[in-house]
Each structure stands twice: as C-alpha cells, then as structure tokens.
Amino acid sequence: MDPIIDLDFIDNRTPEQAAACDTQVTKETNTGKTRKLYIESYGCAMNFSDSEIVSSIMFEQGFDTTADIAQADLVFLNTCSIREKAEQTVRNRLGQINYYKKKKPEMMIGILGCMAERLKKSLLEEEKIVDMVVGPDAYRDLPNLINEVDGGQKAVNVLLSREETYADINPIRLNSNGVSAFISIMRGCDNMCSFCVVPFTRGRERSRDAHSIVREAEALVAQGYKEVTLLGQNVDSYKWESADGTEKVNFAQLLEMVALLSPDLRVRFSTSHPKDITDEVLHTMKKYDNICKYIHLPAQSGNSRVLELMNRTYDRAWYINRVDAIRSILGEDCGISSDMIAGFCTETEEEHQDTLSLMDYVQYDYSYMFFYSERPGTLAARKLEDDIPLEVKKRRLAEIIEKQRETSLARNKRDVGKVHKVLVEGPSKKSDEQLSGRNDQNKVVIFDRKHYRKGDYVNVLVHDCSVGTLFGEAVD
Ligand code: SAH
Ligand code: SF4
Ligand code: F3S
Image 1 (tube, rainbow, N blue to C red):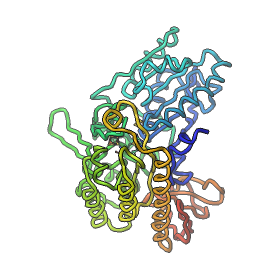
Image 2 (image 1 turned 180 degrees about the vertical axis):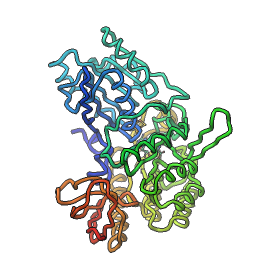
Image 3 (image 1 turned 60 degrees about the vertical axis):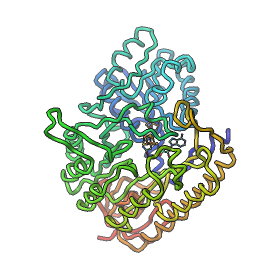
Image 4 (image 1 turned 90 degrees about the vertical axis):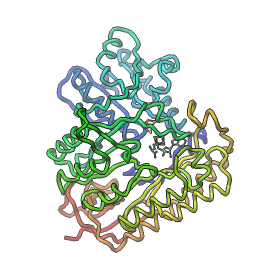
C-alpha cells in the first residue's frame, strides 16, 4: 500500500472509539418496503448523523435499509473530503462496489456528503458507476433525484443552503447501540481555518431551532436512550433566535435545556473551538452532574506563528488560558482531548517542539493526530507552500503520537483506584462475560458482567489500565 495513504490517519483510539467513527454499515429496518437502501458513512459524526436523516427521507420513499449490499437497489456512500486519504478510500470502495453492480446492473449508486459537494458533477465523469451526486444540504431533494435516475438519467444537486437544518426530520437511528445517540445542533462552519475543506463542503454556519433539539432529546429519553451527543463543527458558536426575535438561546443555555430533561440522561457535545468556549459553558457543565466532564478542544498546533498561519484566530497563550479555565472551574479530572496536525506549511523543528510541549502542559486524555494533507481550494493551498517533506511530516507525527501515548497512560493511571460511574454500552469486544461502557470522561471501561445490562449505570472500581482502556470491577 502507498505509504502516504498508510500513515495519513493514525490515532490512539480504542477499537470501540474507532468503531464509533469509522465506516458503518447500516442496520436493517425490514418493514416490508419494496426497495432496499444500503448506506455507508465516512468521516465525522456529522456525516453519521446525516445518514440517519437520509435513511428517514428514503424510508418515506419506500426504501427499507439493508446491511447486505448484495440485496440493495440503491447504494449510498456518505463521503468525507477532510484529507486526501479519505477521498481515496471512497474511490477504492467504488471499485469494489462495481463488482456488485456488474451482477445487478439496475443497482443505483449515489455519492453523498462532502466529496459530492467538493467535486460536484465532475465525480460523474471520474467515476463512471456513479448515478447520483448529492451535497449535504440537498437531501430533501433525494426523492426527485431518484426519480431522475429511475428515468435513466444521471442526477446532481450540490446546492448549499443558508437555512437547511433538517430540524423536522426524525432520524432513523442506524448508528446507535440503543443507549447513546447523536443530535445535530448546527450545520456548516464560518471559521476559515486555512487547512480545512469543511467551510467549502458544508457551507455557512447555521443553528437549529432549540426547541426541535429538545424535542429530539425528549423523544430519545422516552425510547430509553441514556446519552446524547450534541454535534456541530463549533458548538460554542451555537446561536438560535426565534422568528419573532423574542427568544435567544446560546450554547450554554441549550446545554442546560437538554440537561434538565432527565438527570439520567448524559449530555455530551463536540466540537468545542478554543476561540469560542466560554466560562459560561464551563459553569453550566459544573452545575449539572449529567453534563459529562469531557471537552474535545482541538489545538492543531502549540505554536503561535503556525496557529496564525492556520487562521485559528487564537494563539498558544489564549489556548493555555482556556485550559487553565477548564482546570480551575471543572477540576483536574475533566477530560480534555485534541486534534493535532503535524508538518503544516513552513513549520520548523522548534515550532513542532512547541506542539509537544503544549501536550506536556495540557496532559490530554487522548488526541486525533494527522499529518497535513493539502486540500485543493483551501486558503493554505492557495497561499502557502506545502513544503515539509513527507518523511519529516511522518516523523513529527510519530513523535506527537508517542507523546500522546505517554500522556494517555499517565492520565489513565490517575484513574486507577477510583470508582467511576460507567454507562454500559454492550458486551466487550473480547468476551461476552465482560461489559464495555464509558465513564464521564468518555474513557472506555471494561468489567465483569455480573447481572448488569446495556443501558445500566454501574459504579466501577478501576484496578488497571492500558493506553486506551480502564479495567475494573463493579461495586454496589
Ligand atoms: N471543527 C473541528 C474540526 C473538524 S475536522 C475543529 O475546528 O476542531 C477534524 C480534524 O481534522 C481537524 O481538527 C484537523 O485536526 C484535521 N484536519 C482538517 N483538515 C486537515 C488537513 N487538511 N490535513 C490534515 N488534517 C486535517
Ligand atoms: Fe474546519 Fe476550522 Fe471549521 Fe473546524 S473550525 S470545521 S477546522 S474551518
Ligand atoms: Fe469529513 Fe465533511 Fe466531516 S469533510 S470530517 S465528513 S464535515
């Protein structure tokens, strides 16, 4: 395999954490509809959440979901463009899907999501087996697009919207274990980080009606869900105003509205932006036991000059100030994770060392770590030279990964000997006799099953740990 592809995405997630974010094959609805949809999702949680909206729209059109691609009348790949490798993965997958299409020529193939938005109709020319290209704001148009393809044409809709939030669509929970679910609270992104393709693929930022979010969470509670994760590219800039202007809700207030639904419902959120996270949010987290004490706060780099080139609009001192605020308001135990990019344009060895020293300072519980991958059309691609040799990027990334392994282990060792409240997600990967769940800080905890079941909250005394997992036993 090409080493560029091989090393492009490395992280220190546990298999359980990785499984929540990697490609997922839909579960079956099997309600006796005439046609079947198979959908695969790539990229971030927003895409997984969108696939649930898409499945709901297609269900209304007479499509059940299937987990068996060979059974499908319609195959959707909901795609990601964040790094070159993400797009290459989809192209490779299309090659495999061709095998099924040859056996069943009437099978329709659609590309949804960020790659559809980035490449638009040129995807139809590049990938001949694709019938349909649909951007993230055009899913309501899917019924018409399917009709066009049924009529023998190819179909494209990549219009971005300033308003679309799919607020009224009731997602079909494909990616859920029945315990935790994602709720999209906003779409798009108005931050122009110079490396990032998301503003181009997802369009302008817009916040969803606060009451529709609360209703969705309420419905999940009624169905027995125990955890919701509020999703946005920058949740701290959530801002909704009622049409008559009498009601205004910011992110701290939204968090409170959801937390108040039930003390048994855990509330998580992602992603926080260092420039926007406020003390008000931190105080709201402190006020409610059911808001998890865990913050994903991507730094990207520990050096102020690089951060400026990245157009992150904060510097190292500002970032450290936010971490100090987290530690002083929520305490040392609050989990913090990051995203890091190694080898951004013009980054020197000293500047790379600043990233490592920031990691030492913050003591992240874990990080998602990448080397820089230039994306066409972004500010960096237009203005900066991608001048760090691949070998150097890889070596810096390896150093960042090694540093993260050290801090993950150190942070996990602090958890040994303490009792953690764990929400059980299901049997552990290795044994049916053991259960796997997460503590408040989003760490995976494994313990003997005893009489406990999925969805239970269990107090677990942790007696051992690895880089990615805590091990313990239930205490009553
Ligand atoms: N909205 C989130 C990030 C979403 S993209 C935020 O601002 O934190 C997820 C991560 O992918 C980013 O945090 C960044 O670390 C990484 N990423 C984005 N573009 C990249 C690129 N061109 N090359 C390498 N990594 C990239
Ligand atoms: Fe991309 Fe920056 Fe927006 Fe995150 S905040 S999605 S990194 S532009
Ligand atoms: Fe990828 Fe689009 Fe998410 S580019 S990371 S799927 S917003």
